[in-house]
Amino acid sequence: MDNEKFIVPSATFTEKPDEYELKVSLPGVGKNDAELHMEGRTLSLKTHAKYQNPAGFRQVVAEFDRVNYAMSVDLPEMADPSALSAKLEAGVLTVNVKKRPETKAKRIEIG
Image (cartoon, rainbow, N blue to C red; front, side):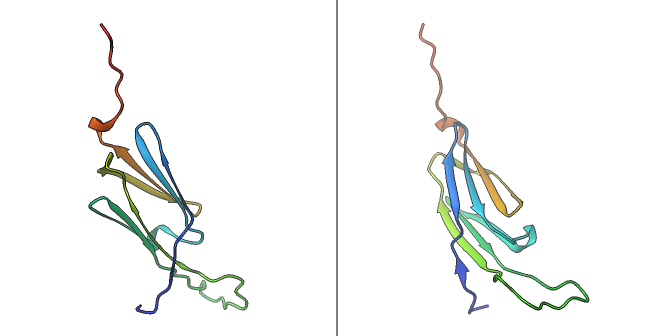
């Protein structure tokens, strides 16, 4: 595994009123092929391509390679690393991180 090569995937990081959302393009990656880790404020992603031909089939031509992806994102100070959720559907990993309650904007009534 020392010779593994990794590609940084395409990603979009957006801020919403109550959370941050990270969308990462991971074509051909299944849920069991991806690892997501949080250390401090750094969110790290690593995938490993694991494709096997179905029983009884032999690959004749390959038009694209299965690739490994890796990336890290430093979350903003307002993010709450303990309030994180992730899902992988149709080759897109979506990670949502809630903002810490004390950092959210509040409307103050004027008396």
